Image 1 (cartoon, rainbow, N blue to C red):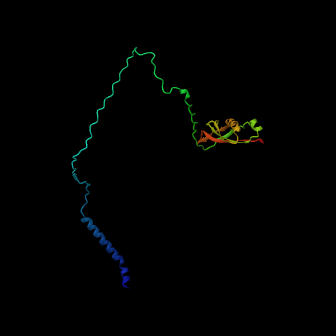
Image 2: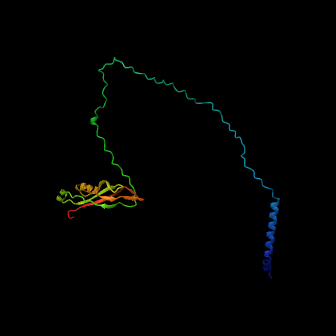
Image 3: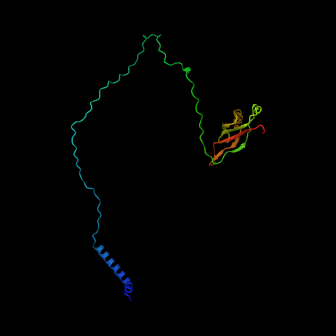
Length: 204
């Protein structure tokens, strides 16, 4: 048997002896080690002394000036010595009729309400083709923005785009005659804003 083989054969014995020695050394250390008593930490009481040189020249502001107090109100006693013909001089501006008219109030802003179910058309109304537009052979498309309330009625209509101004009024009148099922947001009827297209054609 070679020396290496003999060393490998005795390796378990060396390992056991090493572990036994380590256990004995730790047991002796734990037995002889003094008991640890924790103590709370305390800040050191140190008095820091700082010397400040006295300031000899102080800039002392002068005392405030005395202000005369306001006079007390005096009750006015009516007197008959005043002349009845005396009048107050007219103001610098007394012709209010020349003032420019007030600007018109801004149009009300409709709040946008989201909806998850669009309004459904129930009844459609066709616009009336003006005779003067037919005689002049005027054709075109008018786009009208409408606002539908919670009951499906059109409560507002305005022209968004138009090919001929003469066709605007019939388109708005027809838009107010439309009937819808209202839009819904989470199963609750809400206002909605959609657009309608009216086409005026001499062929149709």
